[in-house]
Image (cartoon, rainbow, N blue to C red; front, top):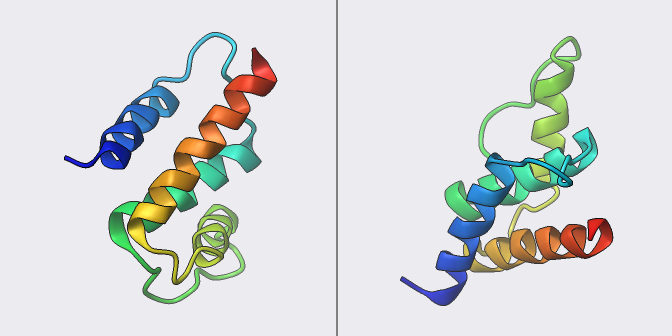
Length: 90
């Protein structure tokens, strides 16, 4: 397993089990979601959800922003985003 993949897996576990001082906003959760999907599934596929599916559209739009980003780069961006948040929140 590559070092980035291992760090990514640890970062995902940290975010999924967010406790204590780390309480991400909805916007931050969307960023993590989009980077996770890009890292694990690649470019977004399928139709954009309808106007009434507000959450689905938000997720689609966030993921779509990372279209073309290689998996390992998305993993690193996820790790970097988490580290940045840890520094901000102590």
